[in-house]
Length: 327
Image 1 (cartoon, one colour):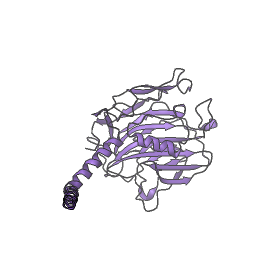
Image 2: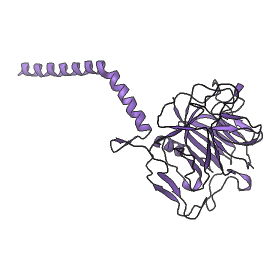
Image 3: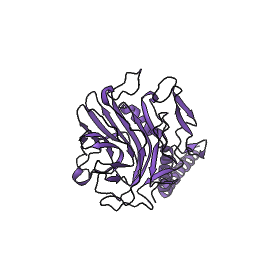
Image 4: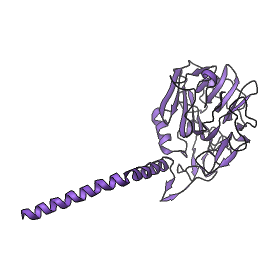
């Protein structure tokens, strides 16, 4: 009997040693595969064991009582947080950014209806609801390492140096523009940062402003990137809003070199948990808090607004790609 037990122990040791040798030999490959699968899961590309992407106009907000109404609003269509089938390229392919001055052919989306955030209503564009005044901008962004030296914009409405809002990919020389510009004041770049959002990888960018206490915060992948108290700001803007670039009062246009997709605008500051939820739902996340939703631009093959508020955009010098990396 003891000899049998010794044999069983020897077999178990041999099996354990074999497993360890297998992991040492193939562990790196398994780690790579696991990393790829986690990345695909992050972008929500799995559905029923098959790769699926959202087609243009597959999901939208239905407002039976018209734009900005809040009664009986809901999402309609194939709304499953699917990643987009195509995405816009800003300043890429035939419209290269030189790295200095203006691009030869600036690419951007211009929204047809000015977004008047603020005024006497204090941002609360949704009658019938009591919400914290302020705003939130969210977008999935993939920036080229070929950065410029100007204040290239992700989402902007800057009619003058002392009014409007601007979410910037780059801060220009010496950080002249913070990552978030609010009515002439801006959130400062983090200490040691080179005045730039991270490049050459996907990031989930969120800018939130709480008008009640004057706090403005920029999040990257649902974690705080930069925050400042900019005070209580009012906005009285009637000029156009742009996605993927900013147009300064001087007429200069500075394009963010890369991809900007699934842009959402709310008339209230989302909480950290709400931002975390959108991040976890991935690049194709459907909007939350529909009653506070001002605009939703998936930028999946077009620049239409699917929030039910009809703030459709005009496209300038943009090409679309189904690839999730830059050319």
